[in-house]
Length: 130
Image 1: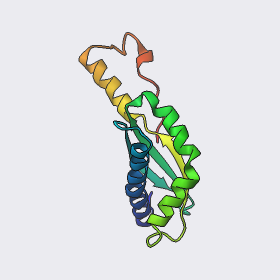
Image 2 (image 1 turned 180 degrees about the horizontal axis):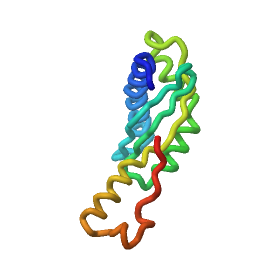
Image 3 (image 1 turned 30 degrees about the vertical axis):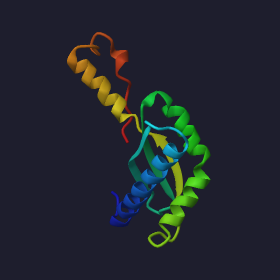
Image 4 (image 1 turned 45 degrees about the vertical axis):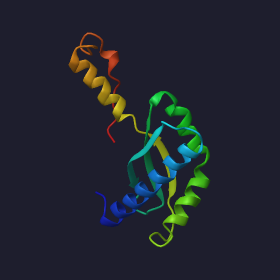
């Protein structure tokens, strides 16, 4: 169960990170690429933040995520300067790819009858509970 403090910190991080990542994508010449932060969860001791990033179009998502991970110290510094009046200590940022949009798309295709997961169960990947 998340505490109010965890929820508040998650919300602050989510809002500011979304702006930082989208601006970095635009400045980096990735016009037309949409990067959004779909979810942030913070550990109870507020030391680690799991950041779920949704990238569209998804064809370059994995390499963009690696780029985000590689620039984690710079992103953390930028985030810390934005939130210095709200957070005393910046949690460690761990980035993960949020593939729920792809999963929803596959479900929609199967419902439309384009791809039938009953005949071909490999179409829908097994999901882990988060």
